[in-house]
Structure formats: structure tokens, C-alpha cells
Image (cartoon, rainbow, N blue to C red):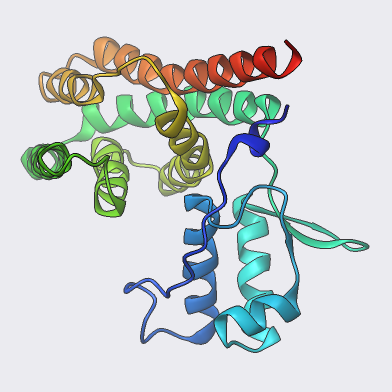
Length: 244
């Protein structure tokens, strides 16, 4: 059984508030990107222009522009003979993303710790505080982290890296973080073992603020690896149940 077969399809098609009022191509890009990351468009789904036109009341030009941008981000694939598809999910793809993240994110974090000032420290603390508040709200409601937490999660990680002096390195980290988001969601939806992600974030923050570069990078590597291990474990267990 493939990982993508374990991702439940969803049906929401609303335009995100962040997309409203923007150019049509930007609206299409933000909306489709969000739907793919959230699993509303399952991995491997064929993205037919005519269907997307009906679903989103957009013409073909902004949709094609959006899809080509998503190809560049690795969230959509394009075969000239078969058209566009939401990128597939697989252990090999996850391994590739994880290995690349393990190269670039610790490098960016090390640069950031070396260059970070008081304003950088403030951004990290503020983002961590927001994450804690949102997690507490989710626990109080009996529900898991919502879309706001997901957005803040990335903002916290990027705040840690934000003092790195290479815009290209930061852009690569941001893109890889997004490509790993579908796998993170898969892990959250299917894992059985509890994970104290708040503690992982706090320890990473404390090490970075204390300028303990090697420790901070080691915690970051384990943080990245843990999601990959969870996904492989879940997929392997499901494969075993299917074959039993």
C-alpha cells in the first residue's frame, strides 16, 4: 500500500482569506497550494484545468500560471502528455526531502545563531509564545492543531533561521519545509505514539538563544528525523496489516 492511499480525501474548496483581493493567478496559487498541503487534493490526483475552472470560477490562464508555480515548488508534477498532477507521496520522496533538509536547515540555523541579534531573539520568543497559546487552545477544545497553528509552526521554524545571511538558503529551507508538510500532517493523523513537539520546540529555542550551536542543530536534526521515522513506521505497519 502506498502512503498516498492512506491520506483521507477532504472536500473544502473555500478561498483562503490570505488570497482574497489578490490577482487571480495569486488567488489560484494560494488556494491550490493550500488544498494540496492539507490533503484536500490527494497525492497523485490529476489536476484537469476544466475541472479546476468549475471548482474555483477561474479561467485557464491564472490556473495554468498557478500550476506551473506549484511545479517549481515540487507540489505538482507536469507531464506534457498527461498534464498536471498533485505530486505523489512515497518513502523515497520523503527520504529525499528529509536528507536535503538535514543539509540545509542546520547550516541556516548555525548561520542564524552566529549572526542573530536581540531582534532575532525577540522574533523567536514571540513565535514560540504564539505556538504555545494555540496548542493550549487546541487542547482545551479537544481538537488537534488547526490551520493557524500550522502557519505559526512554520513561522517559528523560519524565525529560528531568519538571521542567516543567505536569501537563497532561506528560500530553500522554506520550500523544503512546505514540501514536508504533507508528510507531517500524515504523521499527525496516523501516529499512535504520543510526541511532545512543544518540548522539542522549546529545547531548540533555548539552545539557539543560549548560542549553543551544536546542540541546537542536533535537536533540529532529530526533530526533522522524527517525522520521517513516524511516517515510515506508520506506512510499514499499514502495509503489514494489508498483507496479513
